Amino acid sequence: MPPLKPAPAQRRSPDSRVERTSRAPGRQTQRPRSTQGKAPRNGTPESRISGAHVPGSGAPERRTSQHGARPAAGASRPAAGNAAIPPEGERLNKYLARTGVCSRREADDWISRGWVHINGKPVVMGQKVLPGDRVEVKRAATQQQAGRVTILLHKPVGFVSGQAEKGYRSAAELITEANHWPEDRSPQKFKAAHRNGLAPAGRLDIDSVGLLVLTQDGRVAKSLIGENSGVEKEYLVRVKGKLSEEGLRLLNHGLKLDGEALRPAKVSWQNQDQLRFVLKQGKKRQIRRMCELVGLRVVGLKRIRIGKVKLSALPPGQWRYLAPHERF
Image (cartoon, rainbow, N blue to C red; front, top):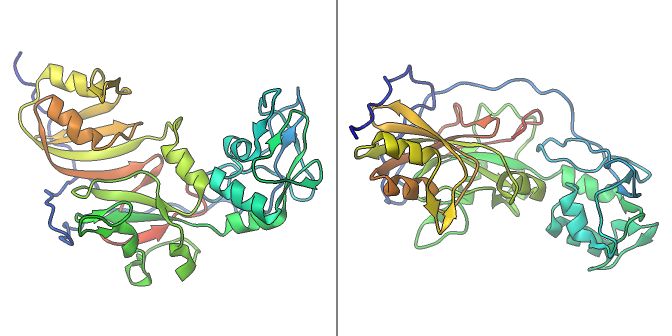
């Protein structure tokens, strides 16, 4: 079968170029040009009390926070809800995470501080919530949660997404006041405490560049990399090799990695040597391995979008806050 001809080169957007990459630590990529975002809508949420479960009632009312997660609503009294608790009960930390109130780690912290009550009484670690119980989250917990930040970084080549390894620096080291993008429109002011507990919500290889999310908020991480996450991630991928029509079809759907069929993707030509990938999955080095299976070699990879949040004009090595109006 003759090789598929790439689509004609399109008019390039600010994110439409991928630089070739190498493993040299600290080597910077060329800075792209780009555009801006839009104005905020609502303010930050007030403190909430989680909905407990009354069989047959509706789901807990929940309000969206500045990070796009959905904590339970309320201020001074618990709301009724039904989150399908099994008759034998469910561990409280698992329930709070499953209903979007907080992460399991946050729930354990809140329980240890006495910030969570069941039926008006403080709970202990490992306690279960039963159908019909009233689960109350104290205002102190939601105030703490509201102070957590999510950061968007344009990761350059030579930095690892997580903990530093093999002589390479961690991307979190770039979160300094000096690297804060001057054009950040978020009302958030930088504090040294914003660096504490930052974790990557999705990774980029050391050779890859582009949008990396670092967050203190477990709800954000779960929404982006949780088992049931359906958030799209968009990449521009520069390749070498010949791609047949069948190969392009397989990139869109039909490949397996680690013995598991991959979810359908959206893959198309951006220009003569660059492909556009849109994935809802994040296996280790997924795009590079997919390309190898169809005879291509990746020589540059750049993530330009996660959900509704774009890399846009953010320069390499600089970062900004996720704004109150932004949602993944």
